[in-house]
Image 1: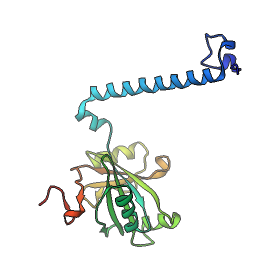
Image 2: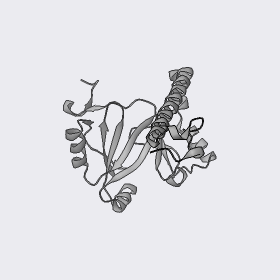
Image 3: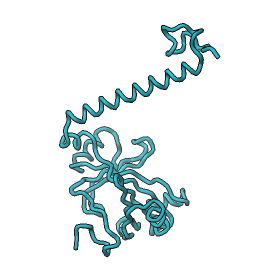
Image 4: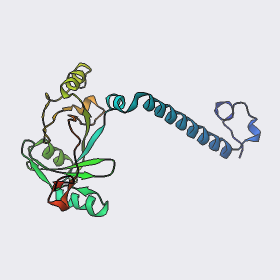
Length: 209
């Protein structure tokens, strides 16, 4: 069928409408979107080349992990280990937060599984609202938690607490989800790179004997 969009169709400008079908216009639009995406991707890659590895870390923070609250950490760990073939740490207790956690390691990402030990803990209250579990927060890294905290406060991102040492000993803090489009964001100082745990090696790091 001929394209009836006429002058409102961005693909038909400069063409004779009667010679184009609606399918032709859709194909042209798809090709144009692909071209725009590729151009934007090339611009981004050029920017990354100009920044270099050191500057890239400063310009774009890394995602350390995505945290998921679960009602049963053993079942959740089994799912990721057996079905998705990920390397999963043995669960450990974090008494300060009244939770058990286990890290799930993929080649390019880490998931933090969290099971509350108290109904009155923040994760416990989250699970009460979401009994099947769900995405709890994402964690971004920074080179200086204190500076990041001050900058976040200055720009209205509503830090929920001053930087304090977390489970790994690195200072961290959270941003109020109302300031970050409904997502709880953790900011953690990345002093060292977390090593994956080899659970078949007695829970030791792969580099340990």
